[in-house]
Image (cartoon, rainbow, N blue to C red; front, side, top):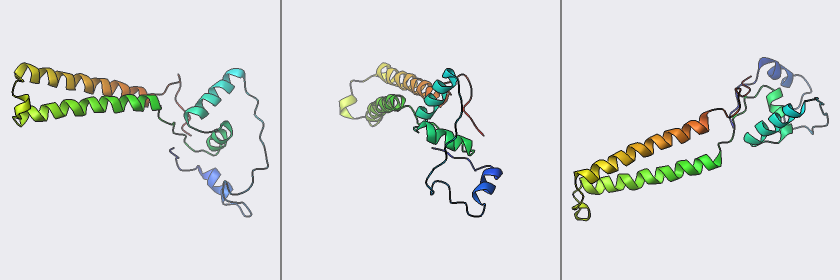
Length: 144
């Protein structure tokens, strides 16, 4: 998770005399914030994407931290699969370029097909990466 520098107001508050370092004191005070059903769903979804409880998410956002989401594991698995495909294709190309006897029957057409497949796989990988880095909601996440 990424954290941006804390705002000056939060720094001043934590530097106040008798103030315990953030997170070290027992949290005995509760803040009540009324929200609409839609806001509740949105906040819960953003907390889940960040891999946090709602309380921790709201506490960190309220203190000025920038919340970085947890990467979608399904997308990471897809990138790993694509990376494996590229590795196998690269291995075939390497064998062909070293004139390995196992690839003697491969002609120029096969080599061009392997290169085209590598290009297609790179494009596929780029598409998956864009899905991972683009915001999922209609608005940008809180940035402080």
